[in-house]
Every structure is written in structure tokens, then in C-alpha cells.
Amino acid sequence: MNKYWYFILPLGAFLLISVFLFSGLFSNPRYVNESQVDRQAPSFNLPDVMDASRHYDQHIFEGQVTLLNVWGVWCVTCAVELPYLTQLREQGVRIVGLYYEQEIDPDFGAKPLPQIQREVQQQLDKLGNPYQFNIFDFDRSYSLDLGVTGAPETYLIDQTGKIRLHHIGDVNARVWQEKIYPLYQQLSKQ
Image (cartoon, rainbow, N blue to C red; front, side, top):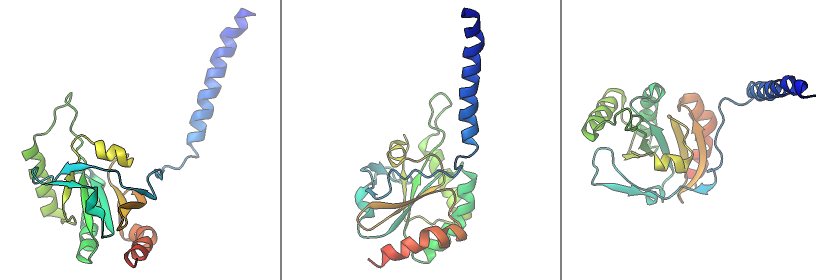
């Protein structure tokens, strides 16, 4: 009977792995982390990207409907969405940036702050600056609290600081009109 186990165990492992991989074919590739939706934005105390002496906390969301946009200069899709977000800001939409630095791993070398600031300023000068200000989440702790999986991601936060929508991917005209704007307009009227 022992010689059959040498056949059955690998076959069983193969079948389990096959079922797992096969189920991935039917999963939603645009998975949205809804665990934070309809909850208060997590507490934080983080500096401004351009002025480390200036700090922001969760109270920045009180009183105004805000788009919190997670972005980075290394993110190609973020660069694509910056001009459209700038148009939204020109229309009166309040957008706050959450700057997500990719190169923070000491094993690969972290960028010095002046270099990050130069890169941010160059990107915004070139493609448009939609942000009221940019929060610097250097160690990604706030991003983890929000459930961020990468960049770009955008959170719609109401006047009480409650997250009302989480969008993964770029904000473009279609996404704005079909997904974000109807809720934004509803919240703005409250």
C-alpha cells in the first residue's frame, strides 16, 4: 500500500494547485478593496512632500468632499491621469495627493528627500498639478491602513472624513462620469 502513496500524494497536490490556478482565471482583475468604504479615514500625522515641517492629519477631510489620490512619479499610469485630474481641480474638485514613494527599501537604496522633491516638482510642472497639497507617506504606513495595493488609487472622502468610494486605476473622463461624479455630486449637495 505504501507504493500507492507515492502516486496519490503528488497527484492530489497537482489537482489542488490546478483548481487554485483555474479559479484565478475567473477572478476579477480589477478587485476593489471595499473594507474601508463607509468607514472613517484612518488617523495619520504625515508631512507635506515639499515642506517636511508642515504636517497633516485626518482633519483635512472635514468640511469638504475630497478626492485622495495615491500617486508617484515612478507610476506611468499616474502620469497619464495627472492632466485630467488637473482639469477636475480647475472645475473646483478638491484633490489631495498621497505621495507613494516606491524606492524606500534600504536593500535597494532610498532616494534622498531633495531628489524626491525635485522629481515631484518636475512631474507636476510638466503634466499639471491637481493637488491642494501632497502628503508624504514615506514608510507607506498610511497606505497600508487605507488598503492601498499600488498606484494610482483614488478615495472619495465625504465632509465628515468617511471613505465613500475606492477606485483602483486611473481617473479618466469615463471613470469620473460613470463611477465617481454621481456620488461626488450627491455628497457635495449634503
